[in-house]
Length: 357
Image (cartoon, rainbow, N blue to C red):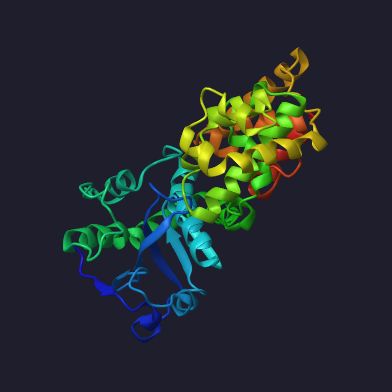
């Protein structure tokens, strides 16, 4: 197991951490009983040292984030780590390099796991014994900290190896560009008014019913954020759909909805009835997206074929360039902001695809 330093006073990190141009970063967090992920541990790896920094030790973290602000963070499958740091500290690193993105651009499986990558590069088997550990427990067991330290031990050696291979293929800037896309705050900012997009069953709602569902999901999102509880703990999807379908105008009508939990009725019945009433003024003319016509189907197939041919020439998976879902969105909505039309993809194939629209 690697040697590491356990830091339970994050505000003092600047006194022991020598600023580096590049560092390996990983996080451990919990989200089983909360809306927001709870940041429980931050692991840092320099060329010489490993630090396990405890954000739950009761010390202020702003000086810690400042100490690593100018470093390029090397992470594997970075999105969740960036999300928990951003939502916990409203902090966004200046620069990152995602090793999972790099592996995809080198022809490995698009979603290759970290353990698989380290096995592939260095023939090292990483421990998997604490993947389901309760990281919020204090004190943390030594075996947990050792496991966490091992998660960053090979990040910088992996970075060096991947960068050498990317450079040989002329794809270094591709990996840097795709990694940079993960630093868009819009990926992590939460808009309650868009919460209906994740509501199961919303597709079948129309007009006033759709408007009520949109209001109810926005209310649930706000409640979940305020109380820091999972959405489904506030009110389940099927209950929202049933309420939106029935449009109850009073508590008695709400109580007659079979799926309505009595405790929820008691706790939030008045608020729910009020939210439903508010929807009367903004009935939606929403209609689900029409099924693609034959022309659109043919266009999608042509685009997919072009992407597949390009990917085959590069020796990478087609979804690295553009997934079927991305291409369909471009066809249906004319999304010119898609990553397909930016960065390295634009010159490679994006301009050809846009000419088909």
